[in-house]
Length: 222
Image: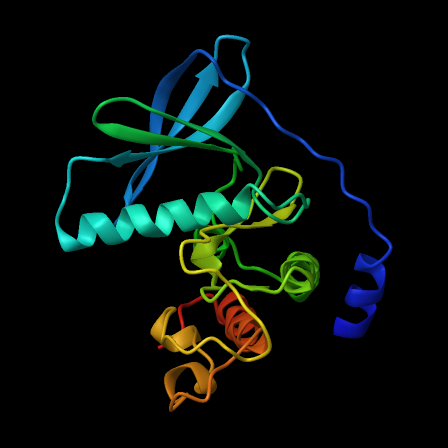
């Protein structure tokens, strides 16, 4: 399956989609995280999108780390153009807050999906294939995501899966990543026990295997 996905992906050509929101309004709260909050936004032209809102006033260690991860996420997302990766639209800020505009993926995360529905094998197979398409694109650009799990995979109304949350993602050469980053039960053995040997793109494939198990068992990996 993986070989077939990679061959298919090599034949694709992506169309650049960029939007500029010069005037917009914040709508309903979609969720909260360690970095801040996510809202639904609407432009004055009527376009809907997701907005990550982050405080710039927190100068503590956690606040600085969140800003660093978001800067890294913006730098990477601005390079990506793929149907299975959440689309980045741009940023805005005022004196106290940073706003990141992203594609609005209406059905939420795969985690919320399997909590609501009993996912069947054909559905899991379809989602897995799409995740592989997204990972193939990332890996072709020598980027390792480092936090593949259902909570970081979004689904739209048409069943299209989008890789999201690139705060831990990192550009890499061959097996040169050494920091232990990710979510514990989804991390590959070489990430946890790297002993300064380093790891690379294959760490995402291990995490994907854990993610498939998560979908099939309808529960987190514990």
